[in-house]
Amino acid sequence: MSMPDFSAKRLLTSLLCMAMLGAGWNSVAQDRPAPGLGQAISEAQLDDFDLVAPPGGSGFPEGSGTAAQGRSLFNQRCAACHGSEGQGTSGNTVLVGGSMQSEGTPLRTVGSYWPHASTLFDYIRRAMPADAPKSLDNSEVYQLTAYLLYLNGIIGEQETLDRAALLSVTMPNADGFIDRSQLH
Amino acid sequence: MAKQEKQALQQVAGNGLLSRRHLLGLGLSGAGLAASHSLVAQESGVVFSIPQWSRQPGPGSSPYGSPSPHASHIQRMSGNPNPTYPGGGASRSPLQYLQGSITPNSLHFERHHAGVPAIDPAGHKLVINGLVRQPLAFSYEDLLRYPMVSRIHFLECSGNSGAMLRSATADSGATAQSIHGLVSCAEWTGVPLSALLEEAGVLDQASWVAAVGADAASMGRSLPLSKALDDVMIALYQNGEPIRPEQGYPMRLFVPGWEGNISVKWLTQLKLLDEAAQFRDETSKYTDTLADRSSLQFTFPMGVKSLITSPSGQMQLNNPGVYEISGLAWSGHGSITRVEISADGGRSWADAELQSQVHDRALTRFRLPWQWRGSDAILQSRAHDSRGNVQPTRASILAARGNIATYHNNGIQSWSVNSTGELRNVYA
Image (tube, rainbow over all chains, first blue to last red; front, side, top):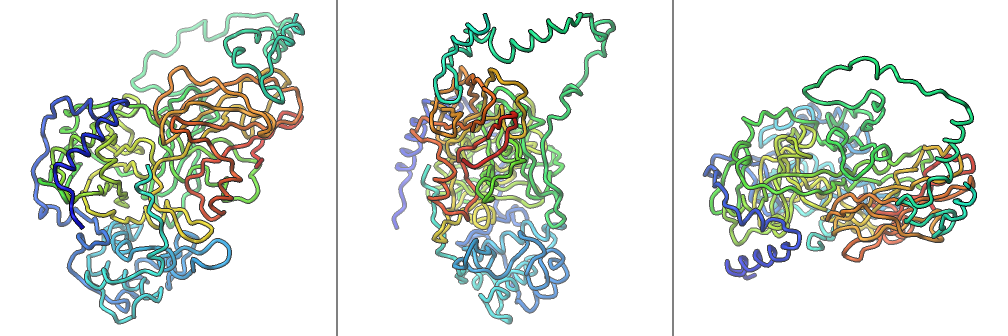
């Protein structure tokens, strides 16, 4: 795939600005001088700050874990809300099971619905457990990710999940989504 | 005299919808409800006197105003706390008690994914990194020095009005607030995101921006770079004052017209990527599963929509007579160009009067006089926008998408009026 060059991007940006002239939006502010106060930083300074882990793999840290390791951690930190086998304690806490082809409204879980395994790692690391988010280290996040993939029959109990292994996982509903991001 | 003026009221659609010209004060003064009230007062012989509050000085000025205690029932409505979701949930704006088109800051709807963080702006940073020439960090004080823009826009949670699709039978106890209260409108002031992206230097391979909040969930959403360069701002003020903690203090992303969740609150990071981040809140949530079990992802602009807020569910009409039907219309695609009202369940329609100045992607107030004759009626509104979109019926949405998807519902709301004047939520 060829990348558009800078001049094409500039052209696109100016076209967008022109398209917005009627609304008087950013073109107004862009005509005024900005003070340029952004402090230059390095990506290395953001190692503990930047938790974005997209499916392409750019944000995944070192570390690894297995479902077998994840089981006891899950029971300790997660089972109170999610149940020891991920069966849940209320609608939104069910993590396991379901099928998009079932009768009626399908049970949509990590296993049946989520299109990317990366999202599981990303979400656990940034937001779970709900009573103490960001209290797990990266290997613990890999362990819990492995355990949930195992409970959903996606990987084996003894498989080691690290960055490379996680990125190679294909979720059951990976092809189930229609991207509407360009319709606006 | 009164009879004569009643005959002059011009009906423009079925079941008592009256001409907009009556809104301008032509012909309404001797007719209907207002007239009967003043007649009753005269006949009862009430003697007017100077009220007590005109006989003594009141308290002086106050450092921060608050509403009258007589308006204290006008509040946001929250669900019950969920122990598995600390701080999570929503509160809904009391649309049926508000007028005009701007939502007071204290009544703007809320949606939190891990509660409201207690942010000290002195310790808060906005980081721009990823596919940029130079990663940058901005403080709150820094951003206050940038050129700003002010725009009036609605904000709507894509889960708003989902109950209308979720329940097979209409909840007769529902109100405008309980069904539709996850929409509000404010004047937002802030720094155009394009200015900050330009300063960091977006690399050519970047196509998405991942936005992350500083709440306990580090709630994240991805937006296409084209939108980020278009009309997105880092909002710092809401209706003139610094945005409230529950709206993202000290700063939030504001993405005009798009589903509310993408206007990330407590914004602390913008990462330029060559793909969407595929966050939990753009895959597992805020996606719509169709009848064939495929699911729509990244449904960004909120569809053209309206509802009648007065009279509306759980209100009571006390006497037959003339009432003003009033409501709100909006579209994530542009400005509202036309709102139609029906009093007979959609058999006939009349154009409502729009507020004098209609803003792009903003709540728009509409009004039309209606003569309620004391019989059954079904009140509906139908909005049109500047892109030619027309608000669909609930039935057509269900026919097109099936009944699994409940986000992004912009279907027509129906309120029934019975012969005793009670208003109820119905499907019609």
